[in-house]
Image (cartoon, rainbow, N blue to C red; front, top):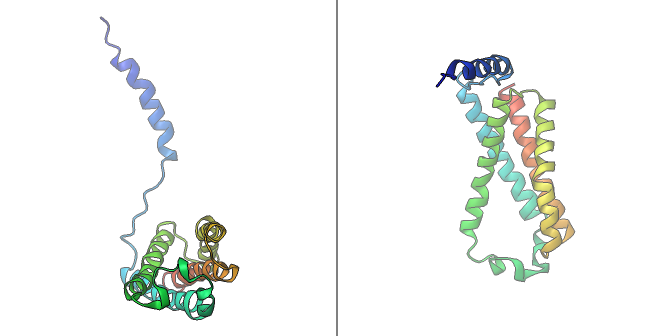
Length: 165
């Protein structure tokens, strides 16, 4: 039986040489200033937590009682744990946004705001609209929730441009 190993290896070698220049360059974050990244995450997390409180809590608080049966904590009793999680999760959102911008080398205000708008259009806006179609959420609450998400991403984008740009 004839050895066909060298014959099979040649096309694979040619294929590898042709594809190698197209291979994505691995981006390392080792050159990044980790203290600036931490500062961007901390600043955007704090500010976006405050905007969440404004958009989703204080601004429309009276409208939440229109359909009290859909809320987990009637009259606000026992919602401390939910408030804690709602205050911490913006830090996760902002840190992932900051790392995505750093990984993609997006440091200008325009680039980060375009990414913020794109992510908002991909996820939170359609999700909020669909949820409001199937749940008893007033249009004002749906608008406030979706705008809260947009502001959260814009704040994270501005923090990237300010601290990493």
